[in-house]
Length: 199
Image (tube, rainbow, N blue to C red; front, side):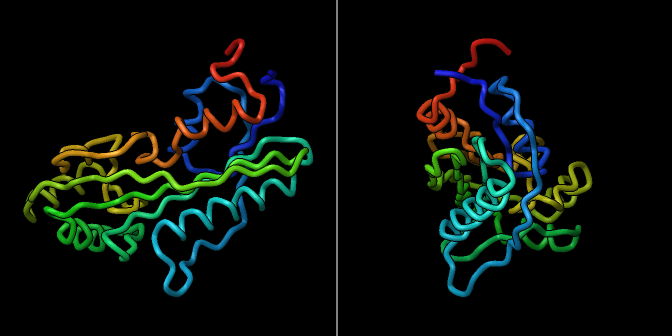
């Protein structure tokens, strides 16, 4: 097995970059040119899986001999998809609706070996059971963390955990946006040493 092949993260997300850095494997990042609009009647897990593959495929076209990672996350309550709020008002409304609810984060993951054409693809779910919180708590939280670029309007790796009652899932890194347990297994199947021979 070898870790010398080029590894590319098809994302500009600082959260995914930080997660992948944990593996201590050198990698490049590339921005995928993929529209993230939801298709009519598309479920949250189907959306996450489709976009993860689309992002990996878009970046893979630029790298003839590499392992390319694509990932996308969709948060939902049932069939309802939770978007990134973008601003304070929408975040406050979203959090008010989430109080006492259970939110499932579906993280789509795709790995493409551009040399062989082999693909690995799947969705890793992770559930956050929110506690009951009021408008004052929401305002205090949003003023401190400003999670306007996060689906569900909270950052689990930060103060957002104060809104949780409990979590449920096999891989906590899936909640942040890149399921490292699944990814490590796939990278080993693709011939990489994880952990690496050297950092």
